Image (cartoon, rainbow, N blue to C red; front, side, top):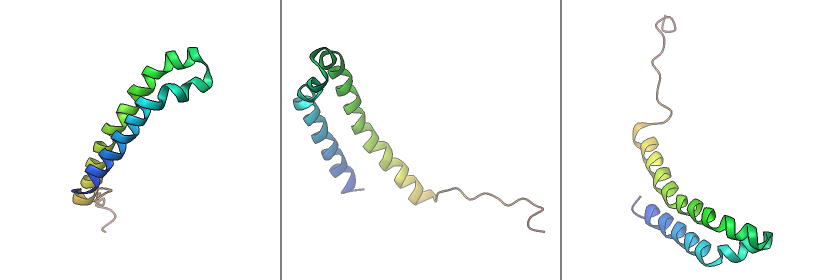
Length: 80
């Protein structure tokens, strides 16, 4: 976690910077009107990548610490 979270956030932030700089240009391949309407939504979706890095790390740590999937108690008739 000490290394993977900062690296994951840095990669995600770099991708977001790429979307900020090149998103409009890439969206123009579909037409100017489409680029004007969709570039703001593309930026919002790209910001979600930062949150996904944090969420994925949280669940990975939880699975390692708590054990995943959780162990179920066996029914009384199965121990028989």
